[in-house]
Length: 65
Image 1 (cartoon, one colour):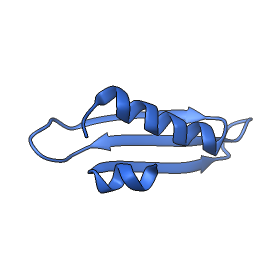
Image 2 (cartoon, rainbow, N blue to C red; image 1 turned 90 degrees about the vertical axis):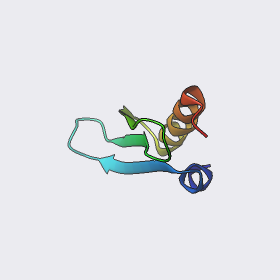
Image 3 (cartoon, one colour; image 1 turned 180 degrees about the horizontal axis):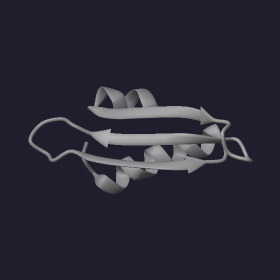
Image 4 (cartoon, rainbow, N blue to C red; image 1 turned 45 degrees about the horizontal axis):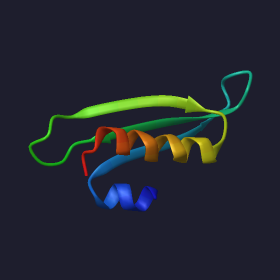
């Protein structure tokens, strides 16, 4: 799914974060294509699967495909 988002113009960034007591994944999702305004959102998720799900869900909520 991440490849599909990138091919449609989404910018996706996932980083493992070990600076917290509980390791997590930091996620950023942004849209910068065409006449639509720039939008960016980020979060922390406990697992990589949760991070990928968050990216998919957020992209669908924005409906900027």
